[in-house]
Amino acid sequence: MSDFDEIIDSLIKFRNERDWEQFHNPKDLALAISIEAGELLELFLWKDANQANSKKVKEELADVFAYAFLLADKYDFDVKKIVLDKIKTNGEKYPVKKSKGTAKKYDEL
View 1 (cartoon, rainbow, N blue to C red):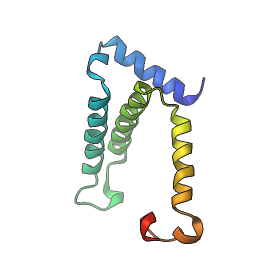
View 2: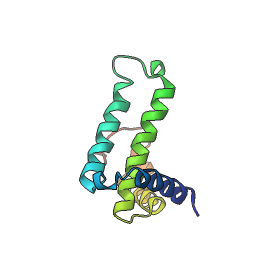
View 3: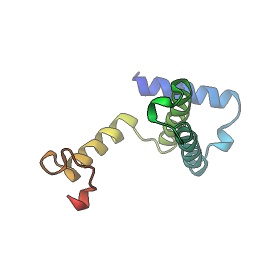
């Protein structure tokens, strides 16, 4: 069992023990990711990055991951594969030669 499988199995067990699957449709999981990401962003609002409470950052980041893993599970996505595939795609869109040291979007390189 991979680390991702262990995480997803634990999330599903937690969810099912509380009968929350009824609330975990793909739309609401996507909304939850956005809401939790907003809560993560709020920790940085009006301060330097190093002033954010790292304990709270860790908690909000875990929430973002949890909902993302549950959404991936709804679509039967292999988390490792989709992330590695995206890295490969981004490597093609952002070749080192053109993108190194710049924050320009791929269509501006």
